[in-house]
Image (cartoon, rainbow, N blue to C red):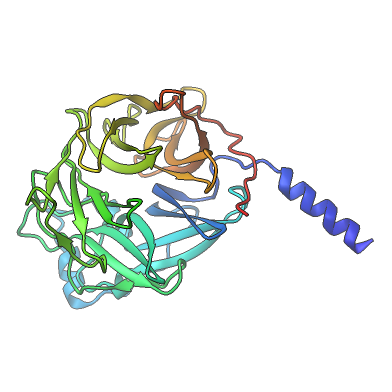
Length: 345
């Protein structure tokens, strides 16, 4: 009887459908990764949901940074940590609280955004933006933290930002680390309508010159580019994807380009994710993942529920992503039902 009940429960779980949003809470900017047989999503903590997050302890230096009300939009003061979510099947998600906290990053004090995680040489590296810097006179930018586990705790690896200055007009935010087939890691990043690509050092803790002698290469694909870059490779083609529109508005969307290398050239092909007046608005800042050994792809993104007017009230969703025979990407259909279970064996 016990075995029969377990088998029935397993069958129900396997055929369960995910629901969008995939978890409770206001989260944004999700990066989806696959480590072994487990999916991971690393998002921005967007706003308090139902109850305030427990407070973070700040050093005197962090308190001084947080006191600059002339530079900081108040909601960003709540963004001092990162949670993560894991799942074996894309349906049932476990929350891992505070995988990164500014208590372990002395130079970061607020606006901790858009994490990007990667496994490398037996460790896990988490890249993140912090402090929403407006000029080179501010301390902040893109940092990197390291852990022995994908659920952290991640601790600052450098004691300073990896990229702490504005290059080619790109605000140092919204970083995404892409590892090519030869093992070389690159990072694409950038807000303020400019995108850069950099080549990461073998230990991922520095940037090194590119083949053309530049270190920060501008790969802005289109005047409508705003932020949230993402790079993937499929069948020898590099896909560069990004968010357009105003992030608090309904026209926030995802566009993409295709190119022959991580450096492009990239030219906008079209929009693949946009609002749906029956489902949600403000859909954007996405990531995609491939199930190894298949041509199955999934997209994680955030969206704003219909009727919500607070720009920080964003939720996480996952859908299938499909390619056409010519390699172009089909527009994503947003749903409330989500995706069917997908185990990785």
